[in-house]
Length: 202
Length: 359
Image (tube, rainbow over all chains, first blue to last red; front, side, top):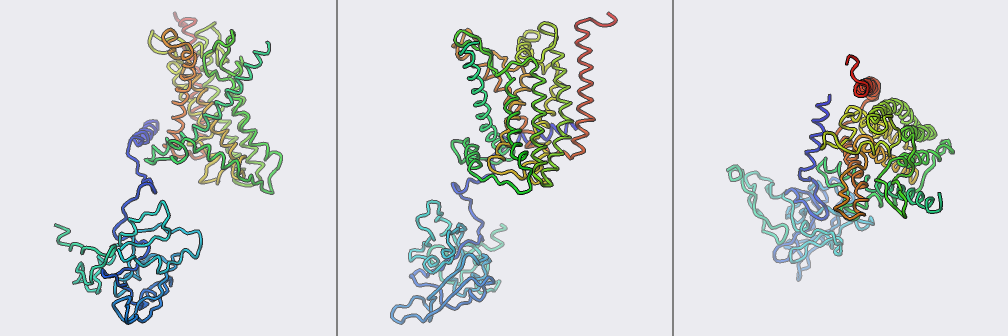
């Protein structure tokens, strides 16, 4: 009995000199996994046009029913999106969202993707409803933060897109996996295709 | 006895009180840091440098929290129990000499609140008193889990008090080999008898001849202070919070305070009985006089904290004992072991004084 006891004590004593496993959040941040599902962002084309065409497929795909979209015809003289219509209202209720990413899969134009930002605490239920003001990326490709004066806000995470679409062929065809099917976007949604399996295994 | 003597006694009392409060603040923080280190964590590091003010923050929080009194409690006893826990915890340290006697205003002042000639008995009495607090808190809470915790406390304290007392007896008996030839119960006297060396270089500490008694004493004080792995009295996983389930706010904080004071003073007592107390090199000719006067306090703290570290260490290592294992360890191992060791050491002391029976 005594030797086991001493062995146990030796184990805990040794651990004192091992490196710590704690990440001192919020002082230091861990790199999120590539497919981390953070808050959403509405992307733009490089020319500044919005990608959203107001089709409401994301709202239809959403299992939590947290997305509300209202489309509108593009003004002829100053179109907002390349298509016929654009997302006039786009709201996501972050209190209901389960971050499943089905909206990202449903989007035919890759207008909605997810970032790596997960810090979304609010002091008011109204603030949890993200409107186009918070969701739509700025023309320079950066993403607006809910609280721009937050000293702890990690803007890096807002500009890191989640890698879900990269692994899935946009058309849903396996042969197209890793092939960029859509025009490259500014900022977060601009990425290189994932290497195919042979390259990765080599 | 004039006014200066009275003032000096008051000074000692206040100094001891302050010492205990300060070390409690440090010990709670130190325990969290040590346990965190052993679990590869960082531990508290937000409040003050290295998080050293964490306990102050926790204490302030508890101080301003509401002390809820459930409706079914036995009110008088319920309110008295936290004080019953704290008062013996403070008193137990009063017989421990925490430094060599110093010269103040032309008088010799022992750094000890009271040098009782029955110091060890006083320690045993006070540590038994502390059990009343747990039992009464558990009973008066009018709830099942505290009651179970209180009942466990009684049995545990009785079992381990005996082993602790027997380990002390061995030390008292051994102290008769030096000094005037009779054993002593006074802690100041016990410390003085541990001065000097064996064979010129090994310090004459009781731990060397009485190592078995030291081991038994160490186990017994861990059980006596209800610390892991003998914390069946609290046992969060089984009994919610044990005896302090129904306590909140400052009343809960007082139980906590008592526990940590007990850890410190029991470690100080173990250091005094077995590790030579404040004995240590003072280099009185070489260093300035005031440093030499303070060094014994430093040595006692070093020895005490070595034992306090063991408290934290085994808490981070060992799982809680089952109730029957606790009883078996107490009654079937420690008490017979302590008795056997008493016989053995009595024989050796007898041989040394009276010679071998066949010699």
